[in-house]
Length: 335
Image (cartoon, rainbow, N blue to C red; front, side, top):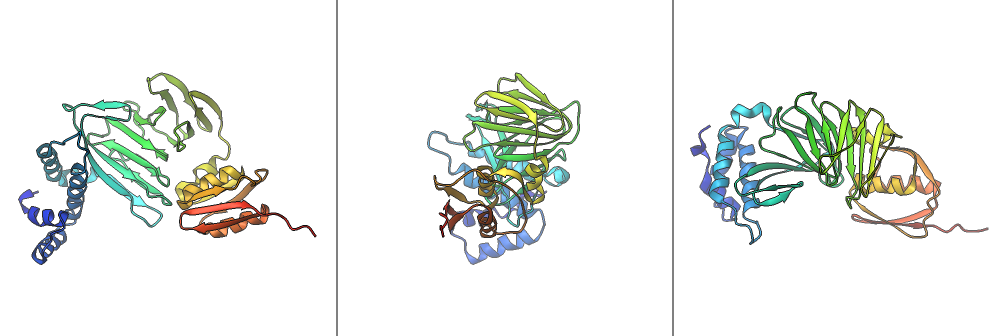
């Protein structure tokens, strides 16, 4: 690809909000000339926005960053099949950020000035789910508000990712090259497997639930904690792990099919999933009773419809103001 064809001046004007009519026409003509040009512009914009906003204590090497960016643009046609694809199945686009990292702590590893990497970071917006196809054809589903990032040298022989939130992994089988998944408390080594991995918002709880295959779970010091078999679940809390039979496996992984299933689950657990599903913040009044379990399915129902369904079982009243939802116990009128 001829990088000299890229309208750098028009792009710079756009980034600095000083676009003239001529620049807009030139930029539109370039974008329409090739289906790959919007991808190139996306990387340029992401790189520019990130490197210009670094804190004062870190001054990025701009010439190095632009050189790496141009190199990536040049090889783009040859790596077309290796590009990750992003399929949002909840009608909202995922956010892809290309980050140049140097001299900072990242996922338990320190990246020095002499060892620079480019990382792609995918963020699934709140209230939506996103599917990612990695360069080795492994698939990852990101639940609402979750994040996934991986280095530019990720390949079939060098598989390593980091995650935050909840992700479902469907890993391409390769006995010689395991995929290493890094969380804030645990690591999972995978050779070809389907499993769900979830961390709570505080990082105190990590849940690994195996659907098919076999995984090895390690701590951050690379020490083995356990090997899971299909149908098993590791609940790791505050440094202590417990392996148990995974209950409600279908219900807990149904979110990747855009379905939320509750099977005799307690009220507080239902609220936790509704928070993530609808991208809201539900506040419970201390008078709420937790003695009820719930069994129902959510597909296209609104949050209001779900709360109305719950109110049939449990006497509650609620208010919805944007993303803030308040639920409290509704006293029964005695006759």
